[in-house]
Each structure stands twice: as C-alpha cells, then as structure tokens.
Image 1 (cartoon, one colour):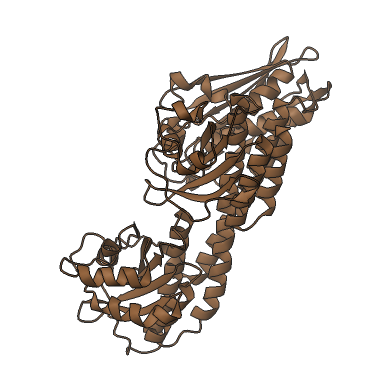
Image 2 (spheres, rainbow, N blue to C red; image 1 turned 120 degrees about the horizontal axis):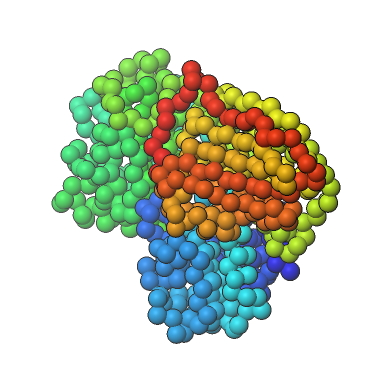
Length: 579
C-alpha cells in the first residue's frame, strides 16, 4: 500500500545522514512502492539551468546511471522543472512535449511521472522521475500524490544531511587552522584540507604586494599530478580586469560558480594552449570560486574544481565552500596579524562588497550559526515528516478522532502557548476568553489551531502582527486567524487548500513550507463537521475562518488573542510579495 511506502520514506529521511546514500536508498524504495522499473532524482545545479542525475534505479533493483550525467534541455525532467508542476506522460512513444531520455528508452519506459522538488526558498531543489514499462497498477493521481509526498520528504532530509556534513568538516578543519603560524605553509595546508572532501583539486590565489594575483597553494586528489598541475597553473596569467572568475571575486567579494575553467581562472586571450593542457592534465567539470575575506578585507580566492569523471558541484557544495573560505580567511588573517609580515600579503583597503558577513569577526559565531542551522533543519524535517504522514493517513481514512466535548478556549490557549515558546522574543501574546464547548476531540482542534497559526507566521513578514479570535453564536464556535502577510491572489483562493499547492508569491518570497498545512486543516475541520474558509487581500494579508458545531449554548463572543511584536524590538520589515 502506498501509505506504507510513505512511512518507509519518512523513516529513511529521519535516519539516513549521508546525502548520496539517502537518495540511492530513496529511489529504490520509491520504485518498489510503485512497482516501477525506473526511478531517478535530479538536482538543479547552482547555475540554475543544469540538472544533475544524483541517484537512479532501474531493472532488478540495481543502481543505474551512477555517473552523474547532466540532463538534456528537452527531457521530461527539464520540462517538469520549467513547468513547475507534476507532469504525467501516459505514452512516451507518442509524447510531443519532450523526448524520452536515454535511460527511459533503454528500460522501455512507456508511462512516466515526474514532479518538481522544492527545498527551502524560491529555488527548486530538482526533479523526481518514475517510469513503468506498461500501465501502472495505481492511478495517475495517486502516483503524482505519492511522488509529491516523497519529494516533500526528500528535500529537507537532503538539506539536513548537508548541514550535518558541513558541521563535521568545519569542526575538523578548525583544529588545523587554529595552529597555523606560517602564511605560505598555512595556504598550502588549506588547499590540502579541501581535497578530496570539497573538491578534486583546489587552488588558492592571493593578492601580492605588487598587486598581482598569484597561486600560492595547490592540491590535487592525485598526488602524481600535483606538481604538473601546479606548474601549469603558475604559467596561466590572471586578467586583473576580468569581469568573471578569480579577479572578479577578489574585487567584489561575491562567490561564483562556473562550468568553464577559463572563466573561473580569469584567463585572458592568448593562453588557450596552456589552459587546454591544464584541463586535460587535471580534469575539469565545474568550479566554485569563493573569496578570502576577513575583517572586511579581501586578499585572495579559493578555487575548488570538480573533475569530469568524479563529481559535479551542487548548491550544498557552494554553501560549504563559502563557510570554509570564511573560516580559512580568518585563520590566515590571524597569521598575518600575529606572526609577522613575511607573508607577502598587504593590508588591503576595506571593501564594502564583502558578503561573508559578521561571522568573520568571531570564529565562534560561525560554529554557532551552523549549529543553529542544524537544529533548525532537524526541526523542519520533523515537521515535514509529521505533515506528510498525516496527509497519507487522511487519504486512507486512518486518522482516529474521538466524538467528545472539549473546552475550545483551553485547547486554543495550549496550542498558542506552545507556539509562543518557539517564537522570537519580539513577539508578545495575550489571551482572555470565556469557555466555549464544541463537538470534537481536543488533539484534532489543537492541530488545526497550530497549523493555522504556523501558516500565518510562515507567510507574514518578520515582526508582523497575527491575531487569533475565538467567538461563538448559538450553534457554532468560530475561530479566525488573521495575518498581515503576503496576501493571496483571487485566482489562488480555492487552490490554497489543495495538497502541495504553493502560490507564485510564496515561492518568490522564499517562504518555507510544503503546501500541506491548509489541506490538513480543512480535512480535519470537515471530519469534525466543520468548515474552513479564507478571505484574503491580493496584496496584503489573509484571514482563515474555522467554524465548528457547539455541543451546547455558549457565552457571547469574547476577547482577542493577538500575536503582536514589541515595538521597541520590532525588526525592519521586508517587502511582501504576493503569496
């Protein structure tokens, strides 16, 4: 049964800490649950245009296509990414929207379903694709629903695993960095530390007193090639006026991702022969160039290179490279400050474009941020797993509810007090209300309140105001949750209650969430013989209304529960695009 498949994926998402093993085990599990001959996960690379095959399954439970080939632009995966909706092809042989991939043709795939995967923020994580050699035993709607649930679980699990890996790597590297005393020796050691954990080969360039940018530390995963790569790299000049690559990163402080080695190294015209020789000798597929900046000063760049046959960088690699460069830059700057001036690195003017942030000022802050991020990802993954599993149970009528009378006021108060514990200190919360009894079990009503308030927080600007009202008439209790968030366009008012729906405004704003909260709320309300409705402004704010039948006559409407930030601590408001 499909709900058992979701349960297995949920357990896998919570337990597996290695990204690659997580994805490889996931595609096997997905194919097994759906009786498919093919399952594949593609990740969108940092260039925003290239899909990388991260894990695939085909045939008799064998890993397929382990070499991470980039997907052509006319494939089903690319089409799905562009369409930004689930795509179902009932007959690939007659498909006109895209071409079957080489893998689909090799496995004789006839029916294929693909769904976009969304991580944190507006940028999609990638695409999940599944195929059958004949007609599937499950309906197209159930297939798409299952795959969207799977994708909703996988994206945060991958992000959690990446943050954990970053914490481990940076903790290990810090041990070596704090003992650095010699600048050039420290640069060489940094390059060695980056290989092979971060890259297949690494080059660290610094700005010398004469103003030139030259390589000081180079390391390669193949020690036999290291000396040749070093010699070839030193023969390449860097164009100081280049608008991309090392020179540009050193001037702007903004990291770059490249699929062209010449662009990454800021190589001027006329050096093509040396560049070709270096590419053939060292291998090249992609590069990340990230600045070395400490205390507001830029003094170099780290170039991390992936070889053609080994790996291709993803978004997590870019973030980890940036964190490693921040940590390394601070250690090197400490060497410059405290261990003499025989290092050939000038004290450069302060550059406002440094993007590494205040974490550079204190080495402990970076660790705190990573630990905070790890905790946040753990909590987010737990919430996603809970929502997906509950959604699966709702679909199969497995949610147990007790026909009982509860004190709605106490339930609402308990739910909101629980939320208050996780809110920033800028929020204050007040609630006074006479007793109102309704028909329905307390855990279900508490879940509805929690989902609605959490939804309002997700789609409100930081420091905004959220108001929860509880009122009653002779026949029903009425709960409303009002926010000052990003609003809902009229054409999306009905869609917001659909599973996995996330509006254009929500994606553009980078709002977190898997598109399940309001679906769950409506399903639970209807099971209590109630209803859920929404009234919203297209530009700003929305109010969700829940009406539940009363067990007996109730007191007149009461006071207002208001989540209002303290004005003295109110953060700067951000722009609020449409939800």
